[in-house]
Image (tube, rainbow, N blue to C red; front, side, top):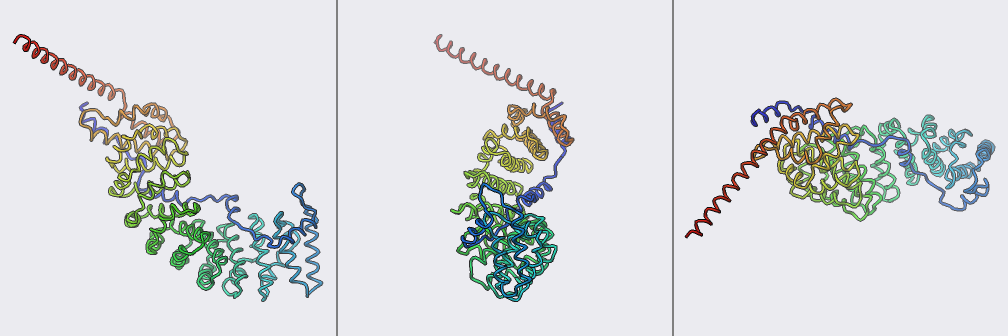
Length: 534
């Protein structure tokens, strides 16, 4: 088979096994994935503990509590029953009795939610929550906050008796800052527990109520609870409908510059969740003119601000070319390349992900990544980093290969990238294996066209990286797409016929080179002999 026919054959046999345009959407979907396990949702919840240490000391003494001894659950139930009985017999001391319940439910060392529920306390708390007295409402909301900081089953009990509409109504109408603060806290806990509760809260127009509170109050503690609850409301997928969240963008943008790193932290996470939305959501963020500030937060002294700001930029870079170009114009690429060398693996991971989204863009965007020195760093990451970060780096390289960026492929191979790239074929991730095989196939096809000789030098680099052995191992892979890809590459670039053919070419080239050297030596000897005869 002639060399030109061989190239034509390889091109005709090559089949695209992964739609990389769809893969770009998958990279965007990857950004949206958040764990929904109970443990993580539990960690999002917050308790409001007793502010007075004397209250805890009294409880410890009353129930003989010590760190080495379990709490007597039955004695706590008995205590709740005593309190409930006093409610029925006393109208004057209801507030002090409610405070006593709140103290028990705010105990630092033990949270007796099950005891409270099984004793029949939930209807009592809801009754006082609806009292037209801020003092009673505050204590009741405090109890609800701590009940909903518990398990899903515990939260479900109080939701089932109608706490959500009551809390939303108070947040909409109350004039007490303390009551508002506590009710917003409780709503945040409930929203974090289940997407169904989150949706019910949003449909009650709670976001508008929270915006009103932020714009009218100056207490940073209340604003902090507002921004925390907003971030919780935006966290789960699907993202709330655009009409609910559109008024949030200018408010969050202003809060991005508030003198409170805790509030900024929650605002950044809220933006990171919003940035997962479609073009409407992303365009709103762009319209707020905050991209430069977001990029500056990459290196803020408070490390907790790095990850959400990185995620926002990465999500925006997964958008359309216009949005991506806007972000890149704000000097995102040099900042992201710098983050590739962060001492924190999670930051390198997110920076790799953002870089991979740029590599899925236009050729000029890809070239800017290359010119800023990203390729050697990505190769180093594939050699030494954690698997999930190696995977992100591999996506970036695969995009460069898929879009036939010859400058990027040459830089990658010059920096000895073939070996760590090929080593990732040993992973258990079928999607990663496919995109690497696609990338290798593209690079090998590039090698057919850029070489000045009849030898595919890129094929030799991959052969030295033990690719042939990896391909043979994948020929019988349980995933048919992987086995087919491995088969195509093997027989198009590394079959025995082609190897023998290329070996023959190399041998002929070596023979010609030796003949030329011998001729040159003979000519030099003749010249020396002539000089001697003279």
